[in-house]
Image 1 (cartoon, rainbow, N blue to C red):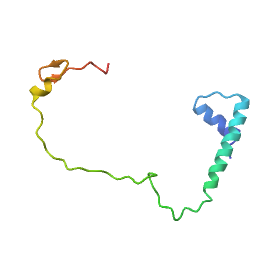
Image 2 (cartoon, rainbow, N blue to C red; image 1 turned 45 degrees about the vertical axis):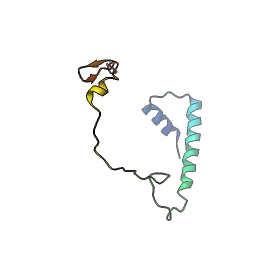
Image 3 (cartoon, rainbow, N blue to C red; image 1 turned 90 degrees about the vertical axis):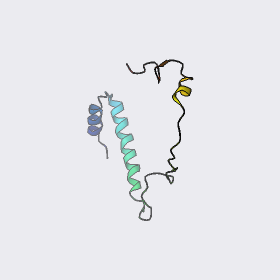
Length: 94
């Protein structure tokens, strides 16, 4: 069960100021939440396999095939601003 002292301690750690009525409210609400979570301990999960995802996940792989790339001269034709054989773009990090 959550006590008033617990709520005051956590509020202090989080640097949150609560009024007297808020402390009382949170004490009741957090106690009710923990009580509800405690009911989960009553469930029989011995036949349930542990999972890390709700849905089955699988990796989709493809062959890594080496292909000939475009000539630099063709690629540089689409550059709005270029410097030698490089695209010149605006600075995004200051």
